Amino acid sequence: MSESNVRVRFAPSPTGYPHVGNIRTALFNWLFARHSGGSFIVRIEDTDVNRKVEGATEAILDGLRWLGMDWDEGPEVGGSYGPYFQSQRLDIYQKTAQHLLAEEHAYPCYCSEERLAQMRTEMAKNKESMRSYDRRCRNLTREEQAKFEAQGIIPVIRFKIPLEGQTRFNDMIKDEVVFDNSTLDDFVLLKSDGYPTYHLANVVDDHLMKITHVLRADEWLSSTPRHILLYNALGYQPPLFAHLPMILGTDRSKLSKRHGATAITEYRDQGYLPQAMINFLALLGWSLDDRTELFTKEELIQNFSIERISKTSAIFNLDKLKWMNGVYIRNLSADALTDRLLPFLDRDLPQSVKRPLSREYVKRIVPLIRERLTTLGKVESAMGAMAEAAPLYDFFFVDEPVYDTRLLLGKKLTKEDAVRGLEAALERLQALTFNSQSLEDALRPLAMEVGLKAGDFFGLLRVATTGRTAAPPLFQTMEALGQERCLKRIKAALKKLQDKG
RNA sequence: GGCGCAUUCGUCUAGCGGCCAAGGACAUCGCCCUCUCAAGGCGAAGACCAGGGGUUCGAAUCCCCUAUGCGCUACCA
Image 1 (cartoon, rainbow, N blue to C red):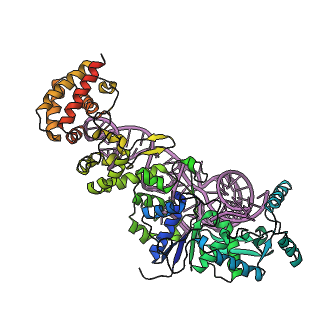
Image 2: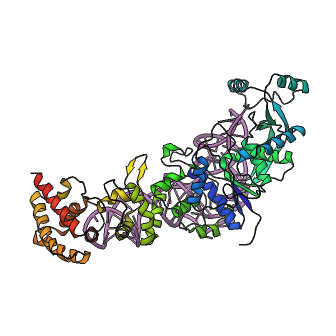
Image 3: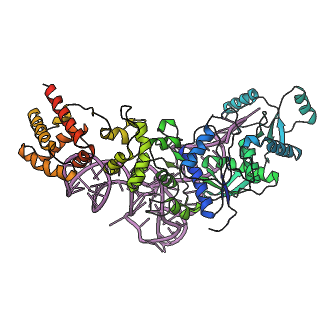
């Protein structure tokens, strides 16, 4: 890919943990940058002192790193257009605001929050269509301004929206969008605490950082005419805009805690693979054609284009993510999956299991559980706890699986059947060299000898050795468990049956 | 209330005037495989393309209206 002047940015505000919507926005920016050989810049928009959340910036960066979205400029890596934290660029915004003031593109507003609130309720009551600032301070005389200043009121700086005319722009996704300037309000540029609003900081930084394409969420579409007007007033060339469709929860509302995990780091902690997450997110609002579902990161980079981003918002489909994650898990080599799985097992397995876990042993059971996994870790969903890896396969690790004695009988066996079966198995297994083939050769005929159907007999042994009615193939499982543990568990099962009376 | 955007199977989507009595994927259901559960294979069901008007020889695809959903309407981003 040749050198290009494409410069895009991901500009999150650290007011919370990054959710899938934020990350999808980052992904599209990153894919576009990598596809075009341009630069991907991360800029932290920490201009809201009140809503700032401790650790949010770190979580955002962690999310990007986890998914392998590297940035060319931004926190930690620096760059020639820094600093990349807006809180460190206050002087620039203040100077710009002063400039706008001098050019009469802006004016100081002394209205108190109380007055503004009152004004709004008044307007709502009178069903007035324009429900934003009434421009009371727009035409203040020097003397009036001086009077407010003398009272010690620190004003905000508002932008002077042209009273007439239209503002139009060509969105790369939505095509041409037109707004009447009369529907726009004199929005605040600089707050009274000296911090800029998003509108000011965003426009100034995108210009100073030479951003060529702004790919951001749809919710910004309505603000774009304000930004265009600001660019014009400042004499800047506006970048190209592409407003991305939103990601919604299952009830079609904006994604939130209620919809279960939304923070990207939660998906990581539940054991989703980064490549699966990337693949899935890429397909939320973008597609290559009518059939391709699975993409490597390289294929995404190669094929990504803004033209193929859809206009409509999408509902986050957890089922499909799970399926896709399963696909990626199954594609992992035994070694790779073992490495991925180890930390999750370490975290999720009961305390009683001795640490450190044996990598060799885990690697041996990986082929047995691989196609049964949808995630690597324990999943807590809104619908209740859902077992994955560790909880589902802890019988490979714990000393004695805990289970209800009735499971041994299943639906068809009597207590006598079960005891007879287990005793016969115990005897036959004592002298056996344990491997899946020898186990099958020994146990299949034994079923008939004890007068049980193979399925029932195997089911009995499955519960006795694993404590579960659903588990990986019996003989391979028993081989992995080993002779000693199997015999011990069968004995324990017999005891359970006898204790039952 | 105003402004803006959107509207194809339950969900993600393909479709950019005739190849569409609408294709793929997830989920669902059935069958096969099978020691259970998965995985896998095969198949079924599922969208009269939000509704109504146009334009056109011909519309899911273009235009208009309506409805619905979402977003914005903060000294939040």
